Amino acid sequence: MKEILRENESTVREAGLALIEIGSKLAAGKIEDALKSLEDSRQRYREWEELDGAVVKIEAAIRERASLLAVQQVVGEMVGVILGLALRSRLG
Image (cartoon, rainbow, N blue to C red):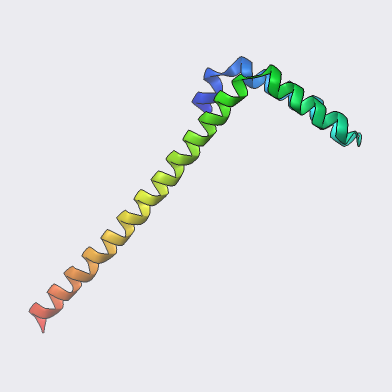
């Protein structure tokens, strides 16, 4: 994730400044102004779509990794059970 942010440093900086602007309006209770600024930012910063895509890729990688770890755990447990049964049958 850090790598993606670093590769898009200028865009990230611009996005941060836009977020500060929007956050300031929200903090001041200017909800309509904040929403307008958000929409304006979406129009100005098409790069945000690329960042959104990067976030989706990161989340998918995390889910894939979690799934892989879950499968590894199940397979490991199965191997443990099979080995345990085999050892017990030889000892018993």
